Every structure is written in C-alpha cells, then in structure tokens.
Length: 314
Figure 1 (cartoon, helix red, strand yellow):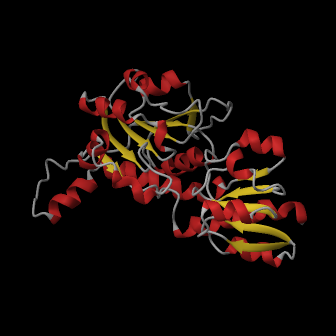
Figure 2 (cartoon, helix red, strand yellow):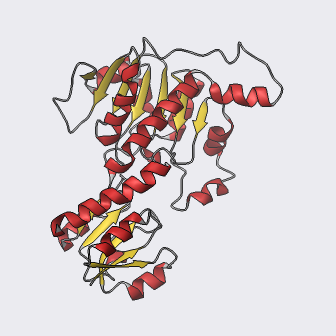
Figure 3 (cartoon, helix red, strand yellow):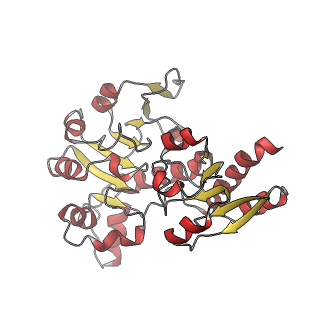
C-alpha cells in the first residue's frame, strides 16, 4: 500500500476516495511536530498539505520515497518547486476547488467598500444614524481592472457580468483571452483607466510587492483596491501612503503581508504601526484569509485533489 500522510486537516473526502481506490493507506499526521515528521516520513509515497510546513530540501530530505505533494489550495509558495522537479516529485494544487468562493468573496468585499456597508453596520449598532457619511458609490459605469487572469481572476470576472461595467484584464503570461465582456489590456492601460483593481496572481519573486510606490504612482484615478491573492503582493507602507494622499479610496484585503504561517499569531505584532493602521482605518476592509474558504470549497478542494491523484490509476 502507498502511504499518504495528511500533514494538515482537509475535507475527509480525499482520504475516503484514496482509501476506496485500494491503492493508498491514508495516515492522519496533522498534529505531528516537525521532529516527528523527520523521523516518520521515510516511507511516505504522498503528502497532503496546506500551509503548516514549508516543503523545501530541509524538510523533504527525510522523504526519500516521496512521489507527490498535494496542496489543498491554489498557491504553491510554500513548496520549493525547483527542488521537487529535481527529485521527480509530482505537485498537485486545487485552484479549481476554491475559485468560485474567491470570486464571490471579492465581489462581496467590493460592494461592501463602495456602499460602506461595514462602516454603516458599525455606526448603526453604536447608535449612530449617519446617512451622509455612509453614502455609497455605484459599481455600474465603472472600469474594473483584474490583474492575473487565471482561475480566480476569471471567476471574479464571471461574477461581474451582471454589472454595466468596462472590464480590463492583464496577465503577463496569457494573451488572446479577450471576449465580448473582458478586454485584454496592458498593465499600463489598466492602471491608468481602472476605478477598481483586483489582484489574482501567485506570490513569487516577480510579484512580491507588485503594488509598490511605483504602482500607486502610475494610477490614473483614485481606485478601490482588492487583494485576494497573497499578502506580500501589496506593500503595506505604499498602500497606506496611497490612502493618505487619496490615490486609493479604500482597500479590501483578505490577505496582508503581516500574516503568519500560523494565522492565529497575526495579532502578535502590537508595535507594528503599519498593521495598526490596517486594523484601525475605516478605509481598510479586512477578512482573515477566508476568500476561498467556504463550506463548498472545503469539499471541492479535496475532491479536485482526489481527481488529480487518482487519474493515473483509473
């Protein structure tokens, strides 16, 4: 039997389907320490992960028989893909599993910011009936720019089809995806024309601090900014400066650069002035990295991984 170790909690449909295939023995190891992993993964055929451990040479050296790593999610930034390639370790992720959730969450954040739903709710609950301060702005008639037109970018575009907008999309690695609704654009044109900009790109050497001071200086008009990709895509100090000088109206951040691998440690940086600004500003809408984390996506992420792992066996 091929042993698959689950180093993080995922929906049980994955272990159920692997076990039912008759090829795999699934072992729950989501509470194992790194030290336990180093001594007990020598016969691992596969690993199922989320974000608890970084899959690099220092970790994977203890898995001499490893054939695949399956990540329950879209991003692969915690996996050393080059090292895995040299080892012949197959990599699976599941952006198809949570793309709809991300698209819906992005739309929800955008409408909340534009209509000031988050501040209006707070005010009313605090006994403040201030209609003028909570006057909204309509999405219809605006230009929305999507940076990164993969699974999540396309899903967000699909959710926007009910609005009378101009939709621009930029992807460094894709061309020819424009249609009657989506206009393929250069990054320069997108930054110059957009009223809303949404990030849907992976984190890598090219994209860390993609939204830096130069990015915000290139904006043609004040924007609503969304980031549902990875925290370090947006440089917080540059975002704050953009908010203070009015080039960013409001930002919806499901992710931010101060996240930890253990997200519960997020609030430990009490002396961080930039984090304090994010937490206190009405112009920042925060959610705890749940854009792709719905009841449905929890199941679909594992189901997609099962399809990818079992396909060679079927």
